[in-house]
Image (tube, rainbow, N blue to C red; front, top):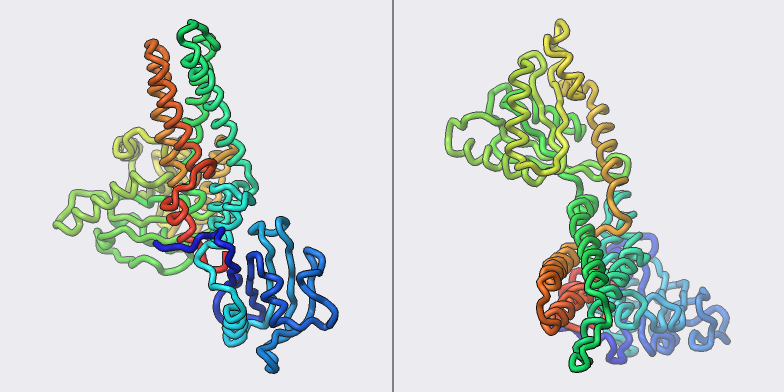
Length: 469
């Protein structure tokens, strides 16, 4: 991707609000000539006013003209560097939301010396001018894309620098370790020791644990951002598709009394108390009768692997304690011992005539009894889901990784510091330790962008932003 240099001295403009017709639209201008360019097309009510001479963080009413032709009456906000989002002189023009008006204002600004901003260029300038680090800049994009309270809170927290602070603390510990090792290398002929071996081992152990905690948090942070996957599994014809429709409160899945109707996974999301849940209806678990059903059941196993929560649905009046235990053991084997929460859902409770003989087992396993067809007790499933997520939320660290790029960098750092711990234990040459520490520092620095100016990395990150941000 070819990008302009964000520090080339140009002044950029773009629509900062959602494209299309609306009551109000915002055109943003940023760069060294922002005030002078807007002054050429903006006529304030106060004729003596010049944006160049006006105070920062002030609002001015006036009109935009193209020569003698009135384009619109507007409000203009001005922000003087460095006290702006980008760290540059910035103007925001609030105009009426007509597409024609928006286009006319942008064309006027370009005629007067602006160029149209590329995707994410305002935030890229904020990063280049030290207003944000790289992880905070990416959190801006996450904040814009957040579609639940949990994703919003996570992005907001990262944008405010809590996560960056944790990464910086880790960097400083790595720098301390590296400096001690390299100092000894400088004075190797004098046989001086600047750090006790036990102190170095303790420090690298601490660093390893902290990086490991961050990498482990990615699993939860990623689902908070994208939605918590919940797989609905069970034997054919127990009401899985009917349950999905009841949970979503719409006819999303085809329902039939014929076993094996669901051949492929069906997914949809809902938001409950600020958390997004991604429900996945799967093919029934049984011996497949044809190749297509076999593929559907394979897909079920795949979705079980991806899910954080499993709803095991069974026909409550066509089950025994022994078969239920067998089914649960089989599900746990299929999960390969991974930490997944299994919720038992006894469906078709409306057909019960008497209390089932295995009622004690259902109580012990905290099964939920529902009638998906009549939408009875569906709220109990939703309440259990939010309860599980809140419990997990209390167990995670303050700094959560939700970005796959950060996770990759942390994973590489973790592997390196593990190797360093082993090398330190074996008494390996300090030259090798110092080289590995520099590599670990590089990967951590990739997260926040400290001392990293790789254009490929910046292009990859900011090209995913919307225009105007």
